[in-house]
Image 1 (cartoon, rainbow, N blue to C red):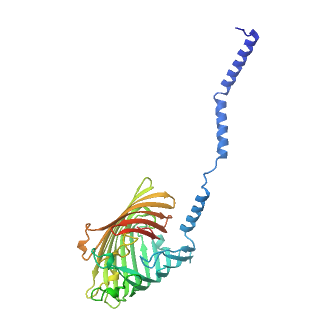
Image 2: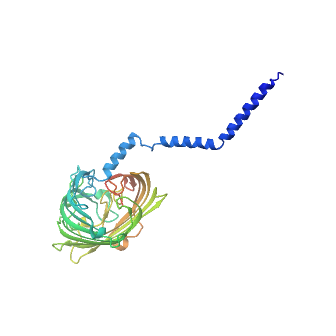
Image 3: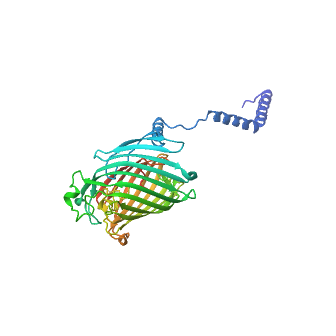
Length: 402
């Protein structure tokens, strides 16, 4: 084996010693400085995450659609069951807080709605909201299937009506939150007319002796008062926590004293958030009870009814009708993103001639899946697929279900 010269061995020993001294000199202070420099360079190059082009487009569309515009869409029909609705409105600020909204809608089946609403949202040191609403509605083919739980789809007859109205509603939170009182007065006429569509009109299937109020055109002074507890947030139009528990008393005073009656509504809503409100269990119960006025008749078209996109969603609008009604709803709502929710839901409901028969048995039910486009204050589009004992149904609506 060859041996390195002594000078060579000395050179390598000195070189290794110098490297070791240099490493010790740089460890750890020099390495920490180097790491800090690299971190500063990375921090200077950091940029916030940016959505893709598709997401940017959807965000702009949803913001403009939900944030509130002077010229805005209006998809509420004149009456439930009118079908696909198109409409628009114009919102104008008449002062720093007060607004005037003029709007209208129509459907291919001839349902028409024209109205104007003035809202003063900051009365009594922002404890109260005043709404003054006037307008005109026309419905052409409202369904009537008979009375009670034994009515069938084959019994359907249609009726129409025209309804002018003018009223005011004042809502006040005396303690600024939770405790709610509300009162309103409205002058309105229900001008009944023959129904259109593919089924018989009501006057072809019934007589005034068999159908109370057939052909009537009463003019009502409708007054109402509500007392309740309201903790829904962030808003009533899109709530993910809190609830509402209230009782509303109605008085329908017919100017001819022929078709007057009273009605009491009992309503309970509770939203139970889970996983930081990403999931919400939402529950709703509503009972409506009516009371005769001596010597007067409650017309069939003013009786409580259930069926349609707001309550018993797999059934035709106005499917069940009688003097009293009860329905229950449960939804499991999941937040998909900041403007889209999905929900699994269950509905159950019934009607009865006697208030004591509004028990939980013998109810019509349905289940379904829904998708909701929403903002912080409203839910302008709701699409739902649902199934009940009378088949499948597709629901398209322009408001939250509850």
